[in-house]
Image (cartoon, rainbow, N blue to C red; front, side, top):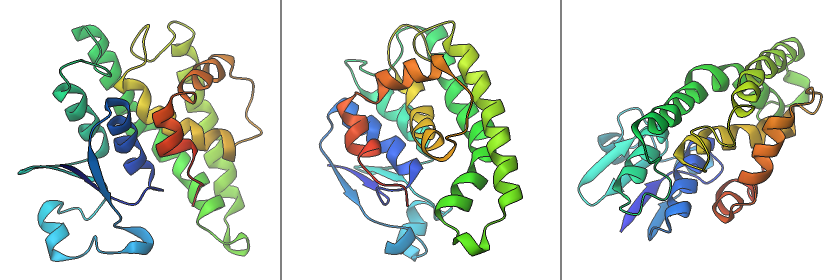
Length: 207
């Protein structure tokens, strides 16, 4: 049986689990990392030398890095449920998956850590404000892309929407002072209705 190692409130684990849910895969998720610990143990480090989560275990195949896990699951599904149908749409999906990691997440992380993981008396409010401004600037790029097509890779929901779906779930809660972003709101209203999103992302409190 497919195993996903990682706690369910990790955004990176949520991405992988959302893909698992979309594909209806039999699986076992194993709590590790954060309050559960264990990710510094030799057995886990033998699977994932970074000590981060998630890690996918599929028989004797081990894979880590959340977006790589999404791509693997999408490619392994014969029905192509979340795999874009053409080379160009797959490239677009991968582009936005990479953008989530290289552009949006780095600027948004200080907001999340500052408001969720830091006691109020220890917060760097200037850093949080700067992070919010940069997150809004990045979100405007997403807004412009979604003005051209319904989903990030084209006309249909795909693997390309999963990483940013997790990020926008958090962004909407933590940056209420954001400007109007109607294309993002239209897209998000569609993705949040998906049962796998509710199970693995929207139904889990931010911690």
